[in-house]
Image 1: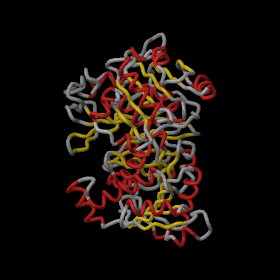
Image 2 (image 1 turned 120 degrees about the horizontal axis):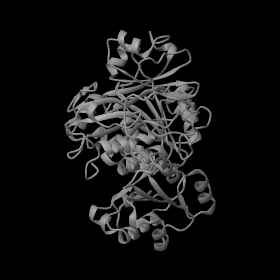
Image 3 (image 1 turned 135 degrees about the vertical axis):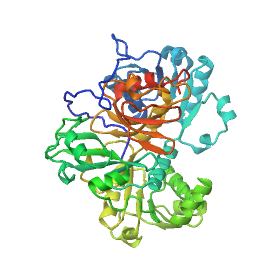
Image 4 (image 1 turned 90 degrees about the horizontal axis):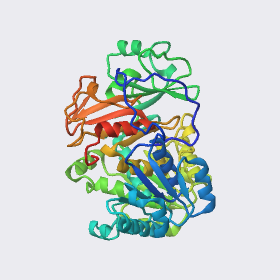
Length: 507
């Protein structure tokens, strides 16, 4: 259940180009170099997150310059990325000038040092007027800086990976999720992953025949066949062994495929394993949601009808347990090794509605989340550093794998992209994403019908939201200011969406 794709890509096969039943689009890249004009991005930090974001931006045809101080890491980046890589200290003014920050639109400081990131952004803000800066910070102290303090330091945006990841987990817990079910758009939509043999009436039929026989609206977003991802069109036939991604409203998918147990069941008894910044923020989010502090009256009403959560925190450190108990009154803390035989059973894992494994070890998190399900937990989630374990989704019982790398990348990309195009799901099998955007006040798409837009090649309109109403978009659907529209699109199609929807101010 992670946004973002893995490092290894399957071999791609030819596909036809359809957008909502219509042939799409124009190319918006330079015919010689393929780089989209007007978007240069300088990144400091070639670690896991910086490398991943650079790769994503390059796939979207951005002009990227990466600065990395470590010689070995810079060599790896140079070999993997099709961009300029500078092996030097990104907190030095002369290096920033060499990278061309004066002509850049965005500056992303993504090293593992808060101080280096903040100093670099401050220097860039002085060197290049008009550039926007983003700093990754791990210390919550910096996240609490006021707007005036950030401006004084040359910081436009601060991104804390722990906070972003914990907030993502809290959101999907609130929206409702289960194994092979991804909630989208506040839980009003679902993306379901199912084997073709388990989808009633799908096998041996074309997509057109399936849709004709169904009395419900849905979208077959993607098909995994022989390890490759296809975006199906009307004549696409479903074969044995296919794995299907279906998108639709929960009630429509329930009628079409049958209900999935426990998707919307409230998680009243929650076990959180591991004393990390992510687990601390997550417990804070859950406690605030219980008290209604996070969402005002709406949050209070949710808490009233759901019932108060019982949160148990588990860690091997007695001191960590005391610290969490002091910070969050009312939670239960258990000191001990959760890998010890019989420990989780004694902690009540079999009666848990949700177990979240958030230690510093992603391998431990995945294995413990799987063990929790085997011991009777209703749902389990594992925090991972990257997308390495996404390929095991089909054989794991774990309900959610939340990748820190992908969460941060999605946040950064939404900032950088015009029209604030946000990735809400990435298919790890290929460079395909479900993205969502809101039609801005000065968007060139406002007031136009979908059929009249120059959409990028290969983009498929997924859904549209008008006010509180979810609509199935057609070619004649008119988009108004404030409407939300989603697309299934390849990475290199993102600049085309920016051109179609991004206004003069980029909104």
